[in-house]
Structure formats: C-alpha cells, structure tokens
Amino acid sequence: MRRTAIAVAASALSVSLSACGVLGTSSSGSTASPTKGNDVTIGLLLPEKANTRYESFDYPIIKKHVAALTGNRGKVSYANAEQDADKQAAQMQRMVDDKVDIILLDAVDAHAIAAQVKKAKDAGIPVIAYDRLAEGPIDAYISFDNELVGEVQGRSLLDSLRGEAGSSAKIVMMNGSPTDPNAKQFKSGAMSELNGKVTIARSYDTKDWKPENAQANMTAAIEAIGKDNIAAVYSANDGMAGGIVKALENAGVTELPPITGQDAELAAVQRIVAGEQYMSVYKSYPDEAAAAAEMAVAKVQGHEIQFDALTEDTVDSPTDKDIPAQLVTVTALTRKNIRSTVVADGIYKISDICAGKYKSACAAIGLN
Image 1 (cartoon, rainbow, N blue to C red):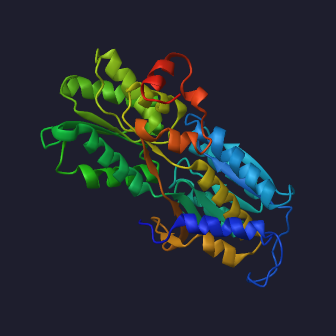
Image 2 (image 1 turned 180 degrees about the vertical axis):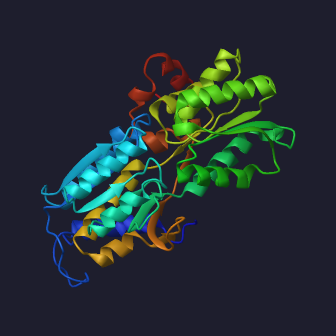
Image 3 (image 1 turned 90 degrees about the horizontal axis):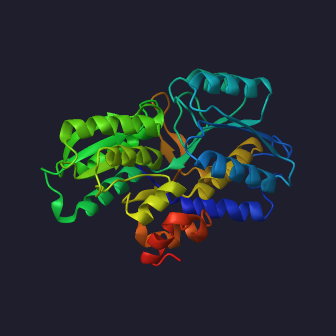
C-alpha cells in the first residue's frame, strides 16, 4: 500500500472548496444536488482511550470541522469502545438504528467489525475507515502511510546505532496488536529497513497495544537476552515505549538503549528530551481529522468531485480492492525538531513539555 498522490494537495484543495462555500451547496461541479443539507449527523467510532490522541485530538478536531463545514448545523455522534470489539459492534449497531448519515470508523478489530460494516451499507449508511483499515464494504479510507511509519522507525533505529549496526546487534521488536491491521504494516515497513542489518533477538505482538503487556514482554526479553546485550528496541508506539522503559529500569539498566515510538504523545516527547526514548513518529492528527471531516461531509452531501479530490490514493483490504483513500505523510520526531513539529503545529506548548523535572533537560537542548 503505497502513496500514489500527495495528500497535502488534496487537503489544500478541499480547504479551498470549503472556503468558497462549495461544501453543503448544490454545484455544477458535483454530480448532483446534495443528498443532504447541513443538518448532517456524522457517527464517529474510536477504539480506545489509553492512547491520548483519540480524546485529545481526533474527536474534538473532527467535531470542530464538521461544525465549520455545516454552518454549525451538523453534529457528531461519538462513541469510544475502550478497546472492546463487542462494545464497538454494539455502538455501531446503535448508530445504524439511529440512522446517522455516515460513519467514521476506527476499528478495534478490523476483521470482527466487517459484519457491522455490511449492516450499515445495507441500511444505506456509508462507512469511512478512519486510521485503521476495516474489512467489509467500506466507502473510503483515511490514515497515515503506515508502511512509511515503519520505515521511518527502522531507519531511525539504525541511525541511532551509528557504527554499532551490524548483524550481531541484537534488537527487540515490540509490535502492535495482532487485531490491528496497521500493526502489520508498521512491522513490514520496519523490517524492510532492518532485515539483514541487525539481529532480531526477540519479537512480540503486543495484545491490545497495552503498555503493561509491552512491559511484560520486555521483561521476558531481558531475561532471555541479558540486559547488557540489547542494542536497541523497536517499539511500534509511544505507549508501549513507556512500558519498555519501565521494564529496563526495573532490570537495573541505567543507560537505556535507543527506543523508537509513534504518536508523539506528551510523555514520549518528554522522554525524548530526557534521553530515555530516541524518537517518535509525529503524525499530524489535525490534518488527518480535518480531512476525515471533509470527506464525510462531502460524501453525505453528494459532492463527488470534492470527495474524489480527497481520496486520490487507493488501498486493498482482505475483503475489498481499490478502496478510495487518502494517505497522510509522517515525520521522524527527535530532539532536533521538537520545536518545528509538535510545538509549531500547536500540539503542545514548550511549557507543557518542559514542566517540572524536564525543565533542565529542555534547557540543555535549547528548548526554552
């Protein structure tokens, strides 16, 4: 699944269209008059709360943009499954029963939710897979370029090793949940960089992405490999990186090996400042969430040209081919570019990052 067009260009186009008042009105550039006016209801199903991004960024940004695109007449019906696939299925069924106009779905279990996706489709409710590629007859998909995420993590890990990289360098891989198709893509991207250049001494698929499960896996890896024999740790996201750090510290490791991450969580950015985590992958949630809101409104209002402009990529799922998609690019976040990424984009203030015990570490790298 590779990018075939620049999502930034599509996003810029959608912004210009909405700024000109095209969304929510009839237009000769659309296939027909809108099927709905501005009084739309967007169903939003998010998977969990352990990763702070969903409650802090995705939901409020989507809600804000739906309101802006519909003159404050559109609304978002929101539910969070808290990592429970059965709970999410019930939440989606309620949205179908409530006759929402369209559903943005970030699946807990991409395979298990397929039956609910079909029920929505049968009820005439389009489904856009958000952040994770769900199975079933979805109408579109928006996420980050997941293989690129893994490639960026793998390259960064090799960079962190500098002259130490080699087939004898022992790496622990802490992959994501086996029920999340993104996790497979992250791993594939990472392995395209790491294969043959280091030794994967232990590799784990971490149930539910939970930090405590990553900590338990890392403890087992330390016991098997030896705390002084681990050159680096590939962690698929920041939450698990936190659990990995705890396991290493509990084992008495004082000089932590390079550890990767993803999501640019505040705690991870602070660990990067303090030298406890080497990098994270910064994914612009404002860009992804805003584009998802625009896709949903354009789709339900029948503006096919605008919708097509937002979905110039295509992807395949295990059940469907050539799904219209937008794949957003990502950035490696290290000490060197904190100011130009998460601070410049308004994700965090320097005062947030450099609070308390991190103040001196921030000053040491000029982040003040």
